[in-house]
Image 1 (cartoon, rainbow, N blue to C red):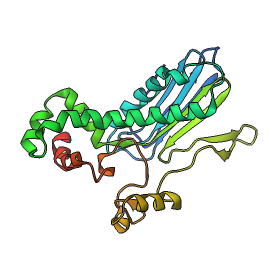
Image 2: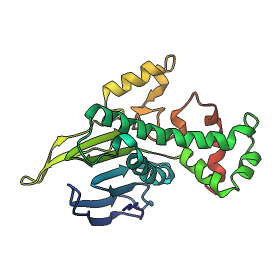
Image 3: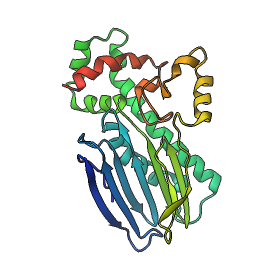
Image 4: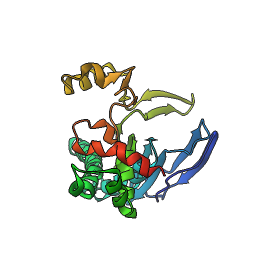
Length: 253
């Protein structure tokens, strides 16, 4: 069962109680979406189950919903098909964590891989007309939208009575005390410019760009998150990044 989301605000966009099969340790997932503005919501969520395994994902899209839409399906599909994660019994913790991390990374790499494949032959001489012609192919256009936009990715995977969390960005998983109706413990760390460790990491990874990689408390002066799936503007060394400014006009027509 996979349930992406869409809609417009302001206010509550959707509220659902999703019942899962009796074989799962998780019986229900409650989902409420709130959009504070009138813009179409760019976020997606997914609740999936397979043979006693449950995946719940939240994907905060930015610069369009294309990436969030894609990974809301691609990530749980990749997790359920990963041999290391296929057992419904307790998993080896270190192997499971590595497999979940690798799955997120592989989905991220698939976006740039397909984008590179589509546009490799017209670089480095790409013009607006050449790109517009290329984008007349609907499949190419969809893959280009995924590279132009981006999304955080928060996943909770439950198997064998154990819950694993994976986080890219600043969506947050937390533990709620049912009696107090309060979230008493954060299960993930926010990966954004409010984290001094993340700011330090970025400056170390960009020698010579220490003053420009973080500007006005944002990555490149634009983004609060310091990690995401996928946003080409995050990859200043990528030769295909030069295509993005040219693509924006054709893609928004």
